[in-house]
Length: 167
Image (cartoon, rainbow, N blue to C red; front, side, top):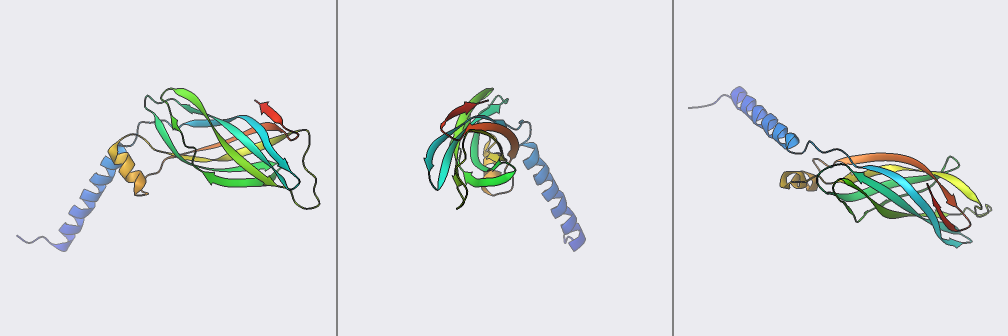
C-alpha cells in the first residue's frame, strides 16, 4: 500500500509533536533555583585593579539535587559595568536546602582613576544554567535542546579597603 506525500507529512508531523510533548513532559515539574548575594570580599588589591570574591546563596526547593553547569554574570558599581564573566559554579545544589558557592570579579582600574575606597554598593546580575534529573533531561541538555536557566539580580556592599561585607 502506498502512502500519499500529504499523509506521510501528516504522520511525520504527528510523530514529531508526540515526541516533543513527551520530551517536555519528562522535564517539567521542577522549580528553578534562586540566587542571592551573601557577601563580598576584596581578596586582592593592586594599583591596577581589585579582585572581589562574591559568595552566592543558592536555594533549591526541589526534592532532588540540581547540578549547576554555568553562571554568566555582570557586576555594576555606581551604575557602571565593571566586570562580566562566565564560569562553572562547580556545585550541585542539595535538595530542599541552601548552599553557597563563590565567584570572582576582577575589576580593572582605568588610568587616571583612583582605587575605590570605603564601603560601596554594587549590583550583581546574571543567569545560571542547571540540569534537571533524568536521562532524557541530560540528553536534551547535552544536545542543546533544553538547557534550563534561572536569572537573578541582587545588590550588596563591598569594603573596597579590604574585609568582608555580608548582607
